[in-house]
Image 1: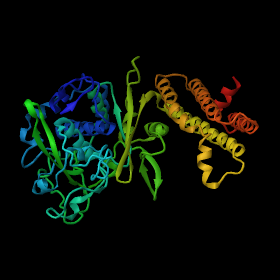
Image 2: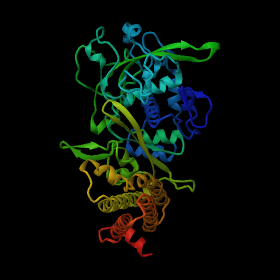
Image 3: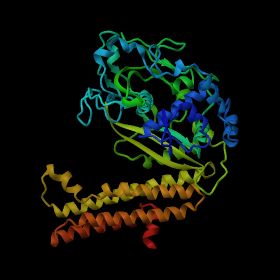
Image 4: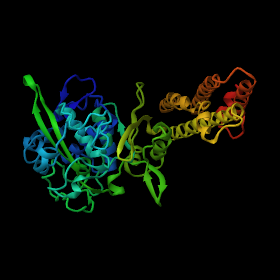
Length: 504
């Protein structure tokens, strides 16, 4: 069911857990799918009662590489019916009640792919949802998990006449709208240990095998019910954010079963407790009087928010970041002992736009240094970008002495090199973090980083100014823009690293 990094064949859940200590990680088509699979594996750990009972025990588990064999053994002992993706009454992760209207409303399996479907009525690539190209079962399972965690709000392509009118009202998945942070270790087993945690009340809760099983009643679709609290982390990480039903189709020549039709409706509504259900959340800005967890931005790359992660790792006393400060990884020359993997889904209202992610090296012993490097590194990049914007304005004022108001934006964009600068700044920033995590000299690394960003900016600005006419006005516009940029680099408000770089 799950494809692993470096493996040509699909591996079952049991095989994944059996080989967790030797596998470096999961191979997934998208960052969201990777998070969804890890969520499911964590749910299995909690359901099998394989989790630390305290922060101190968690630190010991990580340091001593506590084995996770019990998860695999528990799964092997489980009834095969409980893990049957196509069980007639309790299909894994699905709602068999949709069978009543499946023949009438089901569509092609493309509806299951979060990144391809627009508003669950028409695909981005203009293939209608009735398109029946079958989907391999493993891919369908991974897409199902991704929908549960990241499904967008809106209206499903389903009738509410049978089960109730609220069946078609989709709610946003519990990870949609915020950044999920996963600590990645050197192996999959390391990653699982790092992201397990002691439940707030000591109870793991119940695993969600299907809509028709479990100790608590599921919502109905006649009216919108109140959101239910989770029973524990096993419940949280396996929650059914969508009502889904998959139909199998046997492929030709004895090939594995495929999925050729899908039906999707509204799922569970959860009342998340910040103290219990947001273990990894990075504190973000205040919004309407409440501090909202860090959320994905359509205009700001995630690496530019790295300082928020490192600040949490050095300041928070509870949750994932509080625990990380309790352990000391033995440094090995192959790289940082762990990586903070941050993932978010950028959406335009009810339509998925793109995934945003970042991989940030982390070593507890370098926590303060990483916090300083990421904060100052971000400040340097922001300052250089503002200088490029000001230089573009200086060129525009000369090149277009009498512009129409409607033309201002396009004319200024002609000289604005920020579009090239921001993507180019990412790799130097990540190198800065990597050097810091390895114990490097932060002030020296920051000076080198500032010099590289400045060199990139000067090159991109020259390329933009090369579009000017080679006449008196064009030469004056170039001179004003370059003077403005150099003056900003020497200004007393510029980051010290940029001023020092200019003097060298």
